[in-house]
Image (tube, rainbow, N blue to C red; front, side, top):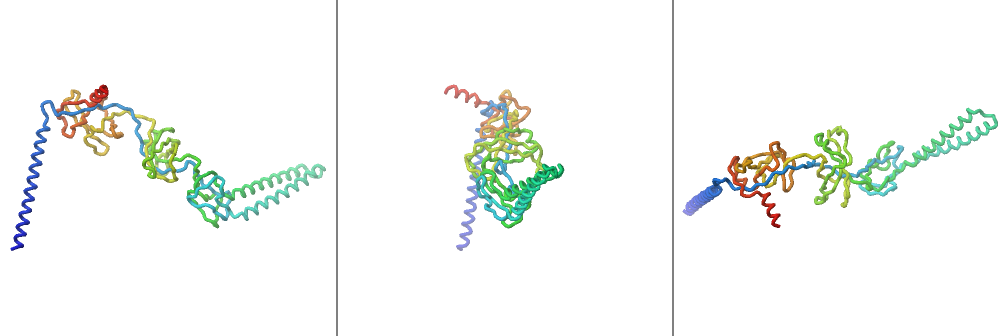
Length: 373
């Protein structure tokens, strides 16, 4: 008996919920009909507020992203090959100009220098002896010239040995940072093989970005850019285009642009990710409308209502967006004209070719308010 009473109670509650739901739907429909009746246009049309489309000349930004690096980077190596005796720094270390970074085992190189010294001493003695004999008319001119040539060769060999000895040590060319270390101690480095990848901190920071062939023709050296790093999200850095590649990259197909970052007042680090925009000096003509006029947007297309030239009919239009900011949408379309009016209020209630009544021209209203002030 108790179980049956529970079932009856559940049925009654369910029916009650249905009744409440139907009552709510009915109330909503009633409100909807009431709103429809109140928003029904009068004989003069739906009252709307309009603003004027303006013709403008703008520079369309090209958005970019990349990594920040030093404008002066180099691979440091030994002049001669040999066994690396000592490495004094590691990746990420900051170094000062002239600081010794690595040395080769100098035993073999020093022996070559000693050999050059001995050869030079012998060449000097030979030249002096032949010169004396030539003065005594015992040696011929050819013999003296040969001795002089041998002396010159010995001097050159000595200079080479000194040079190789000097460049058997790697020193920092300027203040900077060790980005990469390619060898360890006791490994054999070949002639000219890079030991370190070094970035100078005495030069400007830069950002290298790839640009498509469609956009590369818009830029020239000196064009301005703004970039923001993930490390300093609220800090905008000013930059300028300092170099433009004349040919695309072999693998990317993109043209490389170098941006020089100006007046850095934050601590940048090599490899920081950044994004931003370049503003080309090349400008284009377009139209701008208030962002309030946009009824909807799909992809890169916006829809809005303009009014006929007599100001009585709403005409639905669409256009491709060139750029957008907080106040305006910049668009391009051949049939637009300067001074064309667009609806900025109550456009949600409109359908294409609805009759409208302009109750306020927002541009004129703003001018009146300004004149009163």
